[in-house]
Image 1 (cartoon, rainbow, N blue to C red):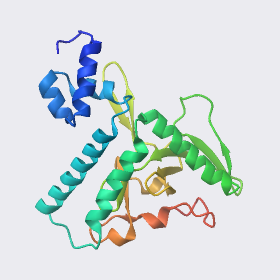
Image 2 (cartoon, rainbow, N blue to C red):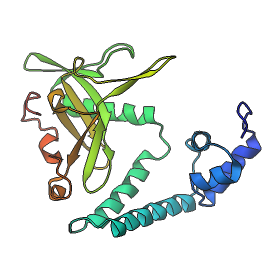
Image 3 (tube, rainbow, N blue to C red):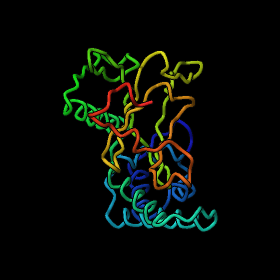
Length: 237
């Protein structure tokens, strides 16, 4: 599609129709000549038919099965079923929400967990601060950056620990080492909140793995970082 030409309603209807036929983004791009980003823009707020959602779910399962056949992993009981179930669960949870909505829900879940355990929580005014919450425990304040954990595979979730500062000339990746004491992340698939100290952040993301899968990926044990009201916020390192 030529740059600067507005997408007509007829074209939008065609995109939706192709998606409801079970076409992938690549197929729609090839057939219409419209960039994937534009296709996603017009589809993310559209409620797809149940048949389409089922087709997408089946393709995800087939894709995972193919990967596991081509790249065999160490034998773990129920690993394939676990991966497939989590992909399906993630689809159901995310639905048609945009990233802002998902982030707001994660912040709300984290706040509720802290408040339910009698930890005072404050929210900064405006959107210019580098932290999302301030928690007070034992007369000590903790600046917290809230995140939504993203499921990868094999019992592993990853949390992004940087942000991108946009400008007219370039984008700058910034960490949070001077801005927060803690990260808190909501894992939607498990409905739990994990907390970890900024000191363990060495790269642009941190990964956590369920203990039953640690011999597949040598990562931090997720269960050790699930929020526990009996632990001080200083003890998540």
